[in-house]
Image (tube, rainbow, N blue to C red; front, side, top):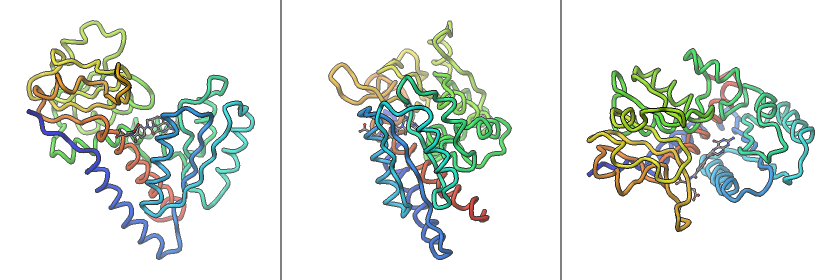
Length: 284
Ligand code: L34
């Protein structure tokens, strides 16, 4: 029987901290502002963006939503980002991914001012993370670390396996585990001995994007299992990359989906936006 690490609870604690810090900032006449851009009408993105707006209201930030039609051109999107880069009351800019296929994701990420890049996707922020000298951590990996810490788990010296090598989750996740002295292996679709590698992990992070991909025979007895996936199963029900029913009895700690990493992504976004507001106002 595993202990279930509640992202709902931990994210509420993080948000309460951000809210208290926000109240402090307001005494200095500063209210953090986040601009969220959403292009098109992907229903999952709509849910996530709504959750982000709610979180902003909850901690006392101002949020501005820019909901653009799916046909928006690259020029129009870049022009909006340029305007937001120059807008002093906006401290953080986030363009919800994925974008419609005709838009150039890389160019969009590059256009956001690194100081307002609360996703930490800009190459200069990615580089900073690499060398351990950063302002912002990417929200999802940072949220996973926060969950690990909340359970009192020490990463140092542990064998950590990350399944997935995306720029947004897998790669930075590996880096954050490395910063805490984990011995990190990144697995991906070409990995030959996936089952062996995974079942050697003390800490296993699943960020594959495939429903119930991680089965019990891929998990070591007593492992800590963090599930980044958000998928729909054969019945249309929300599920992670981990087969929870199979894996939970074997793990020592496990995160659920929903109510695990997802809410943490949003809480860490609040933390980054607060940090951005402080940096832009010369407070640290
Ligand atoms: N630019 N794009 C940008 N930044 C991000 O940090 C994201 N991500 C990912 C997708 N695209 C992005 C998110 O916001 C994933 N993601 C995200 C955010 C919130 C939740 C899930 C993913 C979330 O709220 N999850 C809830 C359930 C939501 C539901 O009911 O569908 C949970 O409990 O897991």
